[in-house]
Each structure stands twice: as structure tokens, then as C-alpha cells.
Length: 124
Image (spheres, rainbow, N blue to C red):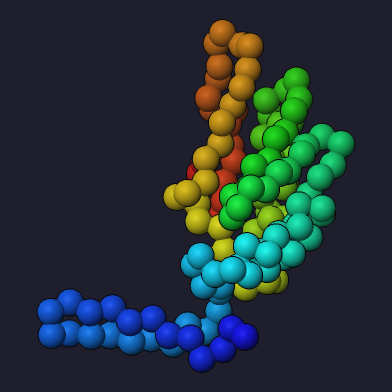
């Protein structure tokens, strides 16, 4: 079903055609269903008592709660390592430039040096 696919790009007289060996067609009828079936496994594995993960389309969110910022960052780092390993096992990757960390707090003074979370060797 997902075999014999190619993508062609042209500019002026130059045309390049490449074989598509993995992934799902953008906007394909079954693409969303296939992704949900794959991603559901990841979401089910990464819901715990100290964090919650949600998925929407091809996006994920992970919510970590806690009182100590260092502990929250440590839990988030552990989850991100697990997500990264899961992606590697499934021949996928997470783009660190499209990954953001948002901190919600009541603290008036935040010590940003306590924030140490990275993904694929990139600080978030």
C-alpha cells in the first residue's frame, strides 16, 4: 500500500525525482489512522502518576507537575529520554527546533539556572 511512491520537484528546466521509502502521504486518507495507531502506544507508555501526555494529530504535549523545579525538570528529562529512545526504535525522530518547554508557576522570582532539560543534545 505504501510502496512505489515518489516525490518530484522541478524548477525551470531542472527536475528531481526521489523514492519515498518511509512515512505516510501528507493528507492521505489512512495517514492519520496509521499515525494514531503508532502514537497511541507512545502515549500509553508515557502516562504516569507525576505526568500526563496527550496527542493531537502529529503533535504531543507532556505535562509534569511538582513543587520543586529541579524535580520537575528531572522528571521531564527522563520522559524526553524515553520518548527519544521510543522514536529511535521506530525509526522516527523528534525535531528539537520544533520542541518547546513552557513553565507555569506562581513564583515571582524564577531562577532560570535551575532549568536544565535537553532533547537530542539541544537545550530546551
